[in-house]
Length: 152
Image 1: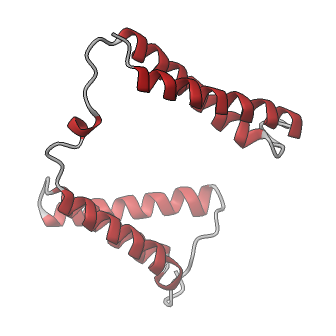
Image 2 (image 1 turned 30 degrees about the vertical axis):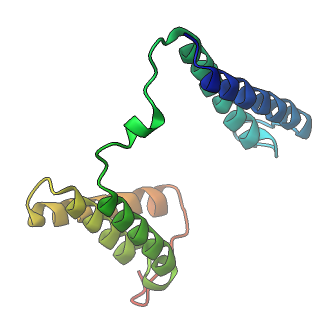
């Protein structure tokens, strides 16, 4: 039995992906080291097209497809709401507090909400993630990160 909704959705997104790919080619792709204005849209649409083809294939081949509501069964909506609020606060506080402090707070919260180890281990992990991401983005890649009131 063919899942008609997924088949229709797959063809719809494949058509969108093809349109964006061809439009991106006309605007100019450029090269990897000097990308043109169509570079990112082309590769995003290419990925969308690949995923659409996978959806079409699974819609044709799969006999018993789970309902989308089955995927959400047993989800802890309280945690989802807390994470959404904290991500919003992170985005708001990042320019004011700075990258290091706000990222440490975000990572600590995300690790604490998972409840997998002791609090001191989660604090150490949050600190390690923050420092490593700072080294990668600021030092190695040269990304300008927001500085807090303390100057870091």
